[in-house]
Amino acid sequence: SFQLKGAKLPNKDGWGILNKSDPFYSIFRSREDGSWVQVFKSTVIMDNLNPTWPPVKLSVQSLCNGDYDRALRIEVWDWDKNGAHDSMGATE
Image (tube, rainbow, N blue to C red; front, side, top):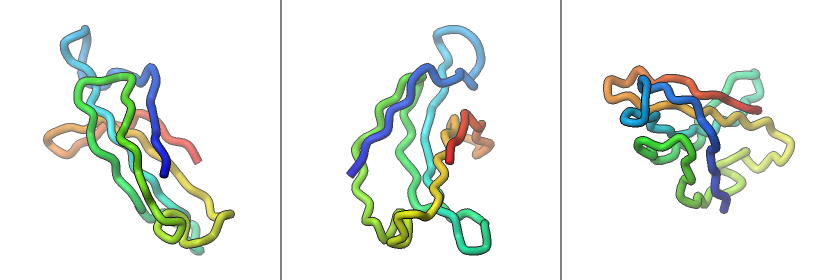
């Protein structure tokens, strides 16, 4: 199991203290052809620039197809009701 936390994320939901980003993250694993496939999507934490997401349990098979050397990518997004989510950053 693991737990992710964000710190000082950018505010993508306007200005001031009333509107803050609603972050969630997705984890992707690389495929043999170099493309990425999503293996997990977190819950959305509303109005929070320093979120702590709930702990997650994923099998090694689900996460990296049993390959400990397989590349992973984590993307953090600001959730928007209309589905046009805003990127907040990523890492591989």
